[in-house]
Image (tube, helix red, strand yellow):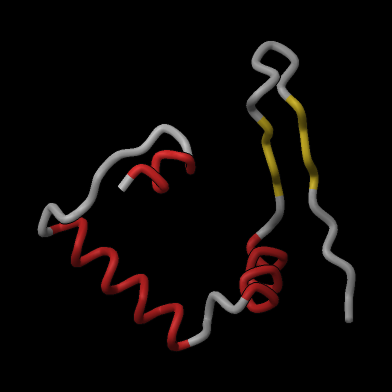
Amino acid sequence: MTSLHITIKQNKKRPKKTIVEFDADQFERMAATFGFFNPDFLKSLEESERDFREGRFRKIKSLRDLRKK
């Protein structure tokens, strides 16, 4: 397996913001590693985009908000 070199920069003015940089080839390798080209994943993306277009979504500020259903 080849290594994936990425650049991570911490913003000093805004400590909660981080910038991650990598080129297109590196992104494709990362996407393949995480399974972003998997047919099931692509199908779930299509379904979520359809839900968004039809207004079946809600904004959250934290993942804790998902527990408050």
